[in-house]
Amino acid sequence: MGQCNTGSKSANRSFKSYIRPRALIQTENTVLFKFRGHLKNNLGLPVHDVCITESSGATAILLISMRKQNRFQPLKAMMGAWSLAIGVGKITIIFDEDIDIRDPFQVEWALSFRLQPAEDIHILRNTDPMALDPSQPLKDGKKVTPSEQVSSRIGIDATRKFPYPLPLRRLRSTWRESPLIGHTTGFEKFASLE
Image (cartoon, rainbow, N blue to C red; front, side, top):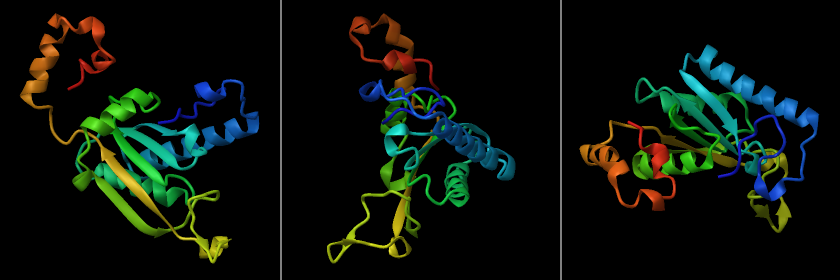
């Protein structure tokens, strides 16, 4: 996962020397503010944070964290985000509020352990494409005109569907006693998650 736009210098390690122009940063912050406001105020969703990843051209991957109160809210958040901006959120992923959507490690962890693909992935076909989408197919070897382009969107519900099972809770309680504690690669970040 790429870094999220934070309204500051590029956080991507590969492009440390690249600094986005001030106007672009203000535009990104405005877009995030509009998404958060639309989802919270217009749709009444308990949204915690909204992030558009920098590596996706600041349009394709939209991450939303929320305090889910029922099983329908993640899909409502996806549809609400897609209705607000045509060219944003080709891939939209919903997380619980305990996941820091600006931390790629936590995003990948939630996708690995809170997602059942057959149940939690929603594909919306025949949608407007993003403005700059190199994945658009060619027609007779030529680029298709924007009016003829058709795309799709994918929405992923990476929220908890139920409390963690007892074995994981037992593992969490004995984690600090493990002889492997000094040889881990990040599980300790999630030792306190429910």
